[in-house]
Amino acid sequence: MPNNPGSLYQRLFNFIEVEKPTYPLLFYRTGLALICIGKFAVLYHNFLIFYGQYGLIQWSISKVNAYPYAPHIGDYSIFLGRFFNISFDDAAMLVMKIFFCSSLCLFFGLFTRLSTFLCFMLHLAFINTGSGIIYGVEVFTQLALFYALFFPLNTTYSADMVLGLSKYKKESVGAGIAIRLVQFQMCLVYLSSGIEKCLGIQWLNGEAIWRTMMMPIFKHYDFSWMADYPYIPLIIGLSVLIVEIGYVVFMWMKNVRVWWLGMIIALHLGIGIFMGMWFFALVMVFLSVFAFGDDVIKDTGLNT
Image (cartoon, rainbow, N blue to C red; front, side, top):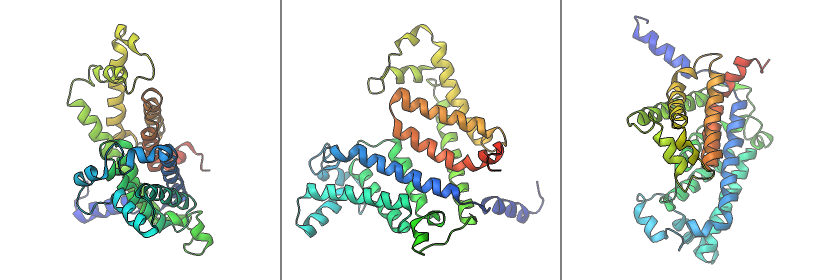
């Protein structure tokens, strides 16, 4: 350990402010846009049931539960409805279509800053309006959109480059900082999740896996046979703890992180297959691949 505190600070600064290839930003921009477009496709035909004026949670109720001045579908819809002289439900559908168009622009990198801002604000309005029906996928999607506000997403293969609004960069410090930020975030997420699971007994004895597989909302397959083999949920539960807590260590180790990334992908694919939480699984895989995918590619020599 260096005796000079300034040297330690410089090492930390050099570790964070590192020049990285920009192609992961292309993956981030298009992947995030596809997640938003996918949510549009899933919600479109039932949008008013979940987010309409008289949906499952009426605007008057969700507005009271939201923070003051927080974006809300009702506020946007009332403004657009009065401006275009249309019903509030039609205005709410217009908000959803604006979200889709913004996501499409984000995918192609067209007016990237503006489209990212619109996606961020509209998605935040969805969260505030449907606070009673959101879960982890909305939180991580919103987090990814927040990061996208500051990432130089239009510097690699974007329509903004064609229009002369941005310049192509093969490598940049901005890309390096973006990747480092998501790396730190994902390490914190998995470490805190693993530690929290260890504080109780259910993940240590396999009961958490058993209860999850038996819950009607997640019961896509019959796993009642596991009652005769209690060591199976025990092994699965302990494996989840090892993978999550080990993430913060082994994802930084050369030639080991490729296996750990594979286990993280397998973990979330399992969540998608057996619990039906595909959007959550895809968002988590997307963030981990962006964070450490370039390092894994370098470890395996696929970039040569």
